[in-house]
Image 1 (cartoon, rainbow, N blue to C red):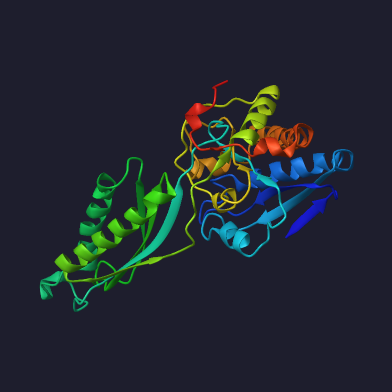
Image 2 (cartoon, rainbow, N blue to C red):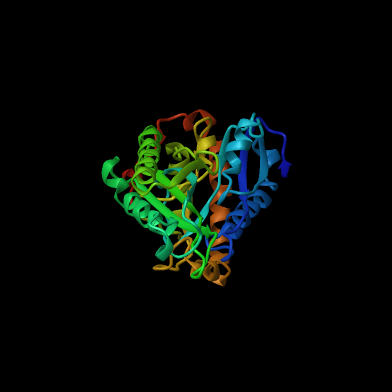
Length: 325
C-alpha cells in the first residue's frame, strides 16, 4: 500500500512502518513511526510542486517478525526511489545510530523418552537438553566478534508437569554489528546445536525463521541535514550505538537511507519493554512524533535545496562520530 504526491525528478520514500509485538502491542512504537511519516508526507504535499519533488508514503508491514522490507526491496517496490527515510521512537534520541544485522532461527528439540516422568527412563528430557543448549547459547558470544548478542525464548513444549515433553521449540535471535560477522555466528550456532544434540542424544534442528536483515547503513549526508533540523525544533540526541536491527538495512545497501531515533522521554523504559507500549500512546510521545515528522519534511526539502549529489558520500555507520547536542 502506498500514496504518492508530486511528479518531480527527485523521488523520496517515507516508511509508514506499522506492526506490533505479540501480546504487548506497540512496545516498539510503530504507531509513532507511521504517524511521523504521515505527518511528513502531509507537510510535503504543500511544497512538492515548488521544488521538483516526488514523495511516496509506503505502508510497510511485518518488521518485528517477517523482515518484510527485505522482500519488498527484492521485488522492486522501491525501484526508482532516490533516497528513503523513517524515524523511530526510543527512550533517547540518536541521530544516526549504528544498528546491527539480525538473523532469527527456530530451534526444536525432540526426545526419544517414553513420555512418562524420568523415573521410568534414563533418556535426557527435552527440558534437560534445553538447559544445556541455553548454557551454550549464553557462552556463544565469547567465541564471536565483540558486540555479538544472542537472545532466546522458549515458544512451546508438548508436555506438562505430569507428562514429560517430547518436543520443545524456541526462538533464537543473532545480532552482529557487521554483515561479514554473520556467517561465523551462524556456523557457531549450528555447531552448538549439533554438539548439544550429540551429548544429550536428542534431535535438535535449527532453521531460519525469517529473512536475514543486513546491518543498517546510515547515510552521512542525510544524517547531517536531519541533525540540524531536529536541533532547530528542540529535539535532543545522544551518541550511542543502538543494538537494534531494522529491515530497512536491506534498502540502505542500495540507496541512501536514514533511520534516526527520536526521544519520547520514557527512560529507563526501553523499546520492547511492556511499559513502552503505554509511553508510545502518551501526549508527550504524540508531540514528539509531530516534531519528528516535521524534521523529516524539513530534511527532504533540504535535500532538494542542496542538491541530491551531496548525498553520495561515504555511508555513516559509527554513531559516535556525530557531535552530541
